[in-house]
Length: 154
Image (cartoon, rainbow, N blue to C red):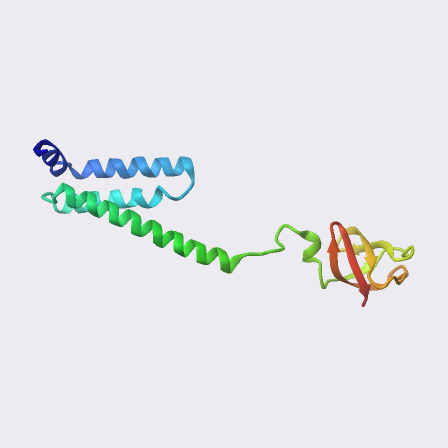
């Protein structure tokens, strides 16, 4: 047991820096960001060991563990809070993004089905009330069913 204690107490600062570099390199390869904080913690313990060469090995390992866990938990907590605030539920749903937009009928509707111009794209459309808008009529998008827009008169 004395050999292990001597080994831990005699670790130079560059061992901690090497561990930090290894963890950061693994983080770059994995891109999970979970190894980032232990890597930074190892570098910080290395700096502390450099400043205080007589730092006990068990204390250095304890500090590494505490810094790594606390930093990871704080990062995860801040990340979750940010993700909830920034969410865009219609980000990849183009038809849902058009709800409330003003569009133009490209041709006379055949019954309640026709085509509308949204920006520079032609979209299938259906009227909710069964009306038959004429070419050039201004319409409002009220919703979407797949790639078919639901419209009403403006």
